[in-house]
Image (tube, rainbow, N blue to C red; front, side, top):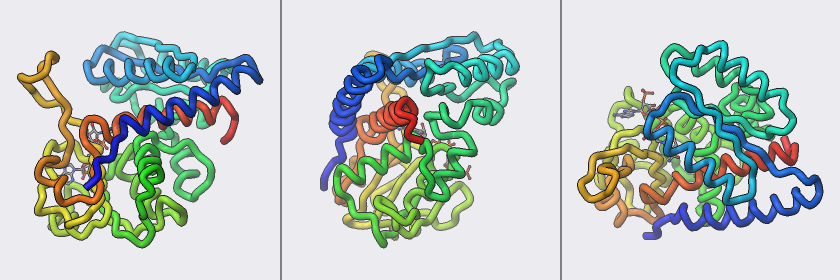
Length: 291
Ligand code: NAP
């Protein structure tokens, strides 16, 4: 059993990106620039955005954090997005989700210009990814593909079971794993809350990718001996062992499941750090006008 070290791989990729930033800076005098919009002060969103801003600093990107009170109107927010779309100095724009209920998430996603949509949520990017054209691919699935590549995990002809069908993880992940390329060429099954016999289906997986947000949901009897298990889940649970009073827990019962796996990602330190470097990579692509 090998633990997939997302923290180590992400640190390596950050060094690679920092090297490219130096070259871009010498050539053009401009650093890649990511702008993040944060609305309100939800604890988890604050943490995610802080990590993204810190990662930008680490690789030499310029970053701008725009904060709004949760009372901001939808129209004011959309106006700001349209303004950033036209700003040649900004390469990538993300709006930290979730947004307050009076704002339509879908309108925000569709207002961000596809060429600055480094989260890869715009229908144009999702569509292009689906038919195999160059696109900004959603950060978490892209980070998982990168882990497969770096650990040289074989995916061809494997049965890949994806648990969860969200637009940001499960759905794009299932499409990418079925693409005619490496890492892909897998036979994919998607499970969700209406799936019957989910344990039996998971047990058939050579590669099991879990993104449902139910801590410890995947137990040892749902996993085949020798499977590759990728745990996307990050739920905050109470803990009296940490200063903050909470800790992150994955969707997989790691203690029980790990001994059965050929590879497994831990939580934290598996998929999470890869998500952030995927965002950096997309911003770099935008700065280089690669897509
Ligand atoms: P989401 O939008 O919360 O959707 C959850 C999915 O799981 C849905 O498709 C749902 O089915 C399915 N589901 C829920 N309960 C289920 C059950 N009992 N059996 C089978 N399927 C069930 O998902 P998400 O945004 O992808 O997030 C999933 C988890 O990943 C969360 O813990 C989130 O925090 C984490 N996450 C981590 C990262 C990272 O960087 N590490 C990035 C993104 C998300 P229905 O469609 O039928 O409702």
